Length: 477
Image 1 (tube, one colour):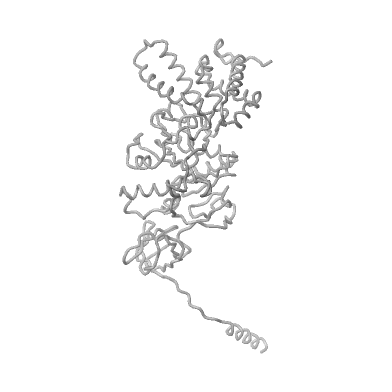
Image 2 (cartoon, helix red, strand yellow; image 1 turned 180 degrees about the vertical axis):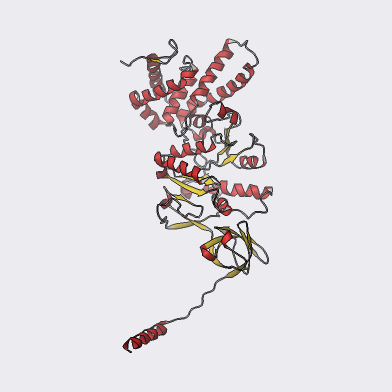
């Protein structure tokens, strides 16, 4: 009996402290669902890009606001939804977690971790859809983003805040350039975000493993919308777009790309002074860069790195087509040392490609043309680079200087890789002081050029390729 009295007393206390309050919720009903899209009635007050809550903890985004219904994109397994399901408006515009807590993690487009390392404890969120920085808050691109790839850093430099398109056919090394660039940002005060859209999860896992092995995940975030994920997550990976239906309308497609890429900018000091650099990747069909999507993105970006299948299969990697590749920022995104040595490189390489094509049809060539062809072959060899081996800019400057100034003319083409490997070892082991000076000065002054010439003279004297043709190496005294 005492127990009953006690329970009654507790209930009285609860009832005395009860204060009823009304909670207003905007509720709608699903009338149609399919292909990742739901049509809902009853959500007349829904906002554009507002997050909607479906049963089973599935969320969607209100995109098409029509007179009598709302078209929503489902950010999850839409097959679990059915006609008649209740939908609740959350009042929040689509947002994702942001902050340093995401660095080193692999997440889906909603910021949810998929790497098995526990939750992401981000303290802040940011709206997915936002207005790009205005003209007044921007400043000119002036600092480089070193890719670590000789061919790109020398001829098609990328600057912080630039939008540089990587374009080419399937399997020509487009992703490799992006990954090498990420690896090369260690210690550069840059956070790299790799967005994998529609790729196999196994391929993304290999890339993440490579970044982990090379210490690059310490400054990287990987956002994955794999081929097995719902289609809506592929749309939201870089940002959100409209549901299917208008994807062939040129105005929508241009706006689709531009409102994402326009976010890439170098801000002035009053606006924070940071930068966002974008390297979008587009796949072409049979090398056709005049197709609809390639021209659409080319018109928005500040240049393109065009990779050619023929060059790739010839073993020239990165398979850079110098004639079709361009950086509209140009030498403003180069350190002074690279600007000085690489000035003639692009022209000489383009002339070599033209001469090489012409020389196929005739053997009677004058001595000057032969010399130019031989120099071009060596420049082509020097610009080759293995994947996952980005090179510090001071070493790039040294080897390109050697090639441009004739130090490699006597080296057989088949021995170029051996020469370069030994030259870089020599610079690291015996010319560390010179390399440090080049790094700190970021310029090839007269004094540093004299030192570099002396280092090259010493090295070539002790590595006699001309007489023996087999990479004979003398020992250093």
